[in-house]
Image 1 (cartoon, rainbow, N blue to C red):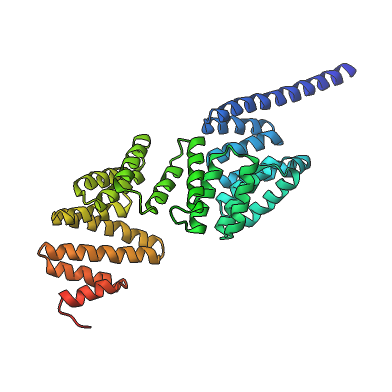
Image 2: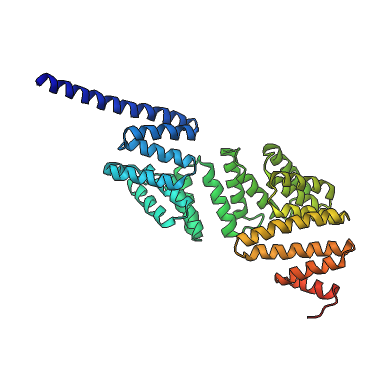
Length: 368
């Protein structure tokens, strides 16, 4: 009897030991895959670890990190919450996972829940720069701009090596202060952009913001701006924004042939951006290639109508749609299609355009 009990105890001990070892082995494979950014493979391994050990706290926490990499933010929240419920000590000590859950809440626009986690993480560790950065993001979304800047300042003071902190501060200052070229505020924004680029040269966003800032400087020559854009295009050849910006710079320089090439490239990279069709249409119009202009205006209208319907009648899209109908109307008139021109002017007027209404009355012999 004693031998049988000993055997049973030994087998149970062996089973438990093998069980734990197997879960840890799967965890190691998952962590290696996660560190290599092979998130799907990592998820498969960590799911096997949790299947072996359904109370594996570290497994749930690693799965939360993996799901963050996969942008599955609801799953991030679920896994961290489950881990905290299983282990009260983890809930009371792991500030970084409160922050990770807060970050997931921010991505899902659940700002009050995010703030609860952020404030708790700060109570655990007041030196976490990410906590103040996330507060700044939430402040910005809530339009509490001065507090947002203070929080970004605090985040940068705690960690001056994070590119995104400088970028977000620069973006906010541009929005909040509406800077004028040559002022200290303008220069401080440009300094933040420069630091952001230096810390992460592969992130195109600060380059894009630099374009926006340079356009605010009336003294900055168009030729210089085009040269800067050429450098950005060389670094980011698959980014349509820089081709579109170069196209507009060439339009303002009356270089319609070059602008056509730029807008065409931008369209090839992003076929759903109605502005590039409209601006290329303008180039064709100015070059008196009216049928080609009409084709582009029609494509722009097609994309805008879909966006307008999907947006539930967004006023800014409605205004752009009216503007494009007006532009097509003027091209139709010059192309010898007065009836089609009147249809376009009427459509613009129906969308609330005073210019469209005036064009309709002036060109279509209708006074109502």
